[in-house]
Structure formats: structure tokens, C-alpha cells
Amino acid sequence: MGRLRQTLALVGVAGLLVAVAVADAGGRSDDTDRVLAKITFIHFRQAPAKPPKPGGGKPPRSDGYYTYLANGCRWRTPEPFVVNPFNGEGLPPDFVEQAISAGMFEWERYGGEAIYGALRLDGYAAFNDDYADGVNAFAFGTLDPEIIAITVVWGYFSGPPQTREIVEADMLFNDAFFQWGDGGANPLLMDLQNIATHELGHVAGMGDLYIADAFQETMYGYSFEGDTAKRDLYNGDIAGIKKLYGVK
Image (cartoon, rainbow, N blue to C red; front, top):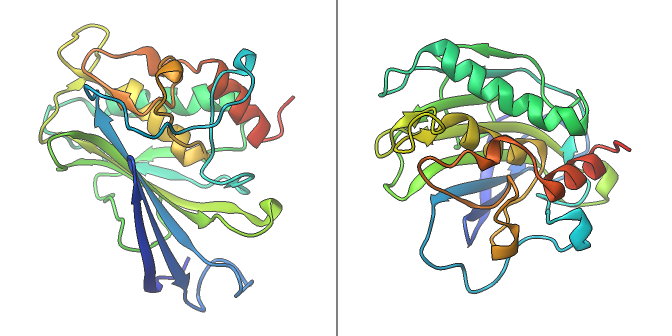
């Protein structure tokens, strides 16, 4: 994947930043008409009030609620992911790896095994939201106090749905202002598997939900310490990922 020559636009909406950029000649696609874009999802701690404008799709209630980065946009070829397990809480690398692996398994349980590639630990892996560098990296770092985590997804989000695809994703967990661990065992901790599963939904192609009726969905956009509900997909999450990856 080539570096980007220029950022053309940056648009902010509730919990979401969209940057559109042009890929250089060394980019992933031979189709020079396609525009490489970056979507940054911001996962906030539980807010006292909901955003004034509801977000998220509204399929039949029997299906639950779900929305996408862009209709039809998903991984066309699974790629490997690296996780830098170093964190300020001293969580063991095996714990970090298991939490993220469990989140991947939950999405692939319903969406098929062609979503994510292999996962491995890499102490040198670094979160990068400046340009698509060809590495899908997850790490811990410093964010603003109200932000739990952010996920950056690079891809082609416009054009005919069958040409849209995700090409890279990076994730950063905020360990400067949150304590991480097993939120089921200690409700004072931000549950790593819970947040990872939500963020991995973005990596797979799912969008955030901010309407009150969607609070049981993994892709509901707010979380809090001790929250473990997002570890398991709910009705809309399941229906959405099946539809996106063509699973009956």
C-alpha cells in the first residue's frame, strides 16, 4: 500500500471523523479513479445524554439495529494483524492477545472466517493514523480523557458497492486515563475484550449506533467500566455482519 500524497477533506460527526485522500501511484489499487479514504471511529465513555441526531441503521426490529462504514464495504482478502501488548497496567501479553482473539472469533463466528487474517504479538507495532502503511496494528497509548479507544479504517468507501473494500485498520486503546483488564471480575476496570470486540466490528466494516434502543448491540457507541455486554454479538450485529459477508 502506498503512502498518501494529500488529505482532501476532514469531516466530523458524532464519534466519527472521515478523511478523504488520494493514493499515490504505488497504492494498492490499479484503478486510479478510486479514492482512498480514512474513517476514524471515536469510542467515548458512557455519556449522560444521547446525541441530538440518532445514528445507525433501522432494519426490522426482529433483526435488531446495525449500520456499515459504507454499503458493501468489507475485506476482500484477509490480512494479518499485529498487536503491541505493552500497556501501562502491566497486563500480560497472553491476556491482551486472548482478548483480541476472542473478539475476532465472535465476529467470524457469524460472518465467516474470511474477515481477519492471522493475529500475532509484536512489541514494535505502532498505531498509525497518518497514512496507510501496509500494517494493521493494535496498540495502547494516550488519548483524551473521555475517549476509550479509536479505530482508523482505510479503504475505498465510494463507487459501486462491489468495488468498495477495506484495505487497512489500526486501533489504539487509551491506557493513560483508563485502567484495563477483566471488567467482569472487577467492575472498576475497562474490559479489554468488550472494547476490542466493538472496535473489531469497525475493522470488519460495521458502523456505530447511538440510538437508545440499540444499547444491547455490540456496536452501540458508548461504554463504561465493568461493561461486558459487547463481548457477545446481539441481534443487529449478527444480522449485519452476515449480510455484509454474504453468510446465510
